[in-house]
Image (cartoon, rainbow, N blue to C red; front, side):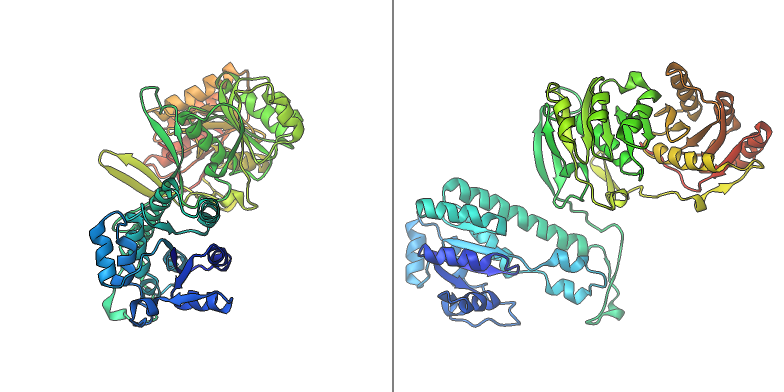
Length: 528
């Protein structure tokens, strides 16, 4: 049995080679890898000895040879293949261990030159990987260090790899090649090439959106059904999910997550991450129906629940602090589908032991969790895809422009920033009443902003919450004064809106007439 080893990332390769040698596997290797193994006292044959042809062109040509690809591609069950190998003095290669030049890491570096990017496009590696993966019945193809233990375990137990493992390795290999080629395509098709600037230190300008968009995902799980029971669905994650994102979570208990659970959980989790103080977000049908900050998770939940107890039934709840016993006991009194937090105390977990259907999700948060966001957002349309930079804008006090005679109080300014954060996660048209770090009424997803304002007032009344002296955030401008009049009639004394309407002055005049403060944020938060 022979193994050809050619790796860019040499993590764990010496230990693997030592174990292969101990099992009687002959070692063939290239360049730097061969030197590393030889320095460790391992008997290794350089590829140049196998091919009878030296490495050349700075290592660009070393494995692109019939004695390599013949040894990988020959089918052992086809006599003509084996006869051809014998006639040309080609030995079979039974195991290929390859990882590719670090193209993705190279182009991710600031100031990466075009020359560096091109030099890190692997040619021989992918060619060998494809050859071995195609001939999976006879060749094991290892493309990642995480696969080393399984390979050694089977070789120790059976002296060979099983069909099941070889096929799995082949699938993983083709997936890796797909990812690699996609990254190269994304990079090159984003380059704004300027021939007159071409030099070894040429750092090209790159378009934000590449000419071809290739994105790769890994399946997390099949789902019982999709948005509706007659639809099929599966959940996928990014190849390298961001720390603190929903895809990194671990389900501690409860039923399997559904399609709608995941969609709503993401909305709740992204919203709660936007707050620095202890916060709780309750989501129903992708909209926050209760959001609050407090001194601790229990207080935050108690305030958030008051906003809309009816909608909170069967909702998704997210905390940005570990859930303790007090918060767990409060939440357990209602029907909840999913509960998410960075952690749960032992006492909190004990509270939910008897509620076996409640899905508990633990999602570790990095220290900069408020800044961890997807860089891009996608939306499928008929035979196409909409791609945009994510709405990661964070509003600061300095961004606010007071446009009315009346000035907001410091308390109103704080509530205004709170309301604006919530409005960002409410489906447009969005109207959010807030006071003392708590949502008091939320109007979402209406075709008319006027209707959203009315619904927010109706919900507050149903929850027996007074909207007197509240702050209101509107995700987009008021096109007429009627929307402003509705929120002021309900009790609002301060309004935040983007501004930018042809009738801005009319709405400003109305605010002055009603004696309320108004600020323009200069940015809107449509969420469809």
